[in-house]
Image (cartoon, rainbow, N blue to C red):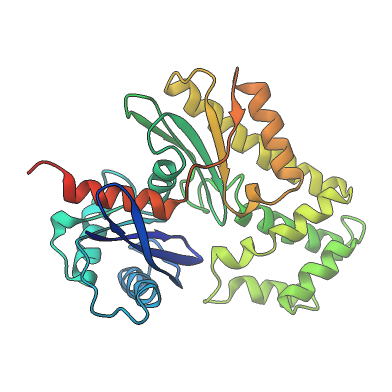
Length: 312
């Protein structure tokens, strides 16, 4: 059977197409496409469709006649059990010309969880453009914490780090804080030269959360170099991530859970990663930091295989 697994974030979408031969996987192709937005955002449905079609097309370069048997997408903003889920599943089925019974759309956190812990319990903590924490116990029960969107619950995300870092630069520029190379570096990245330029950049209609998230590495570098204001932001973000992990462990009664960190913030060696690792070990008895068994595309492919093999 030929299966497709998609991992769709706000910045980009990855697609992996594989053949399942009964006891092993054969990768047929991998591709990239644009990111998705919330389906209820302006152009949300079309962005979702283009993310699927473009990433699949690049994965199937030279294999345009390959027929899929099933597909699963883990996409940012698809809340489990809400009306968005069947709506996104229908969009996926229509884009791929597949029966709805052979497609599934779910949150990218759930495909990442399935990829990280395909057969057992554990917790994944994702800090990329946005953030979210989700865990599963050995009975398959799941609990999700955090990640309710940048306008409501962004602490611990790259967006939040970049956003707060940019606020610091304005305080440096108007004298509330001493000037620091962080201001010059952020403003250079944005091609801004004044307060007015920064304000115009932020309110531009095309501005998205990912644009501010791109500033996060500069804030973390400044914290690592000893800037106190940046260190305070990093510590607050790390504490928010630790709190979510501890909450999931408590709600699922996980004893000595394995915790996997994913996303650009936690996969980058720096002060955020160190603070989160130390905090999790301190707050969750017996917890251990563990690598992911596989990625979200493999999680989606595993779920796609189950769609085909499930009893009718």
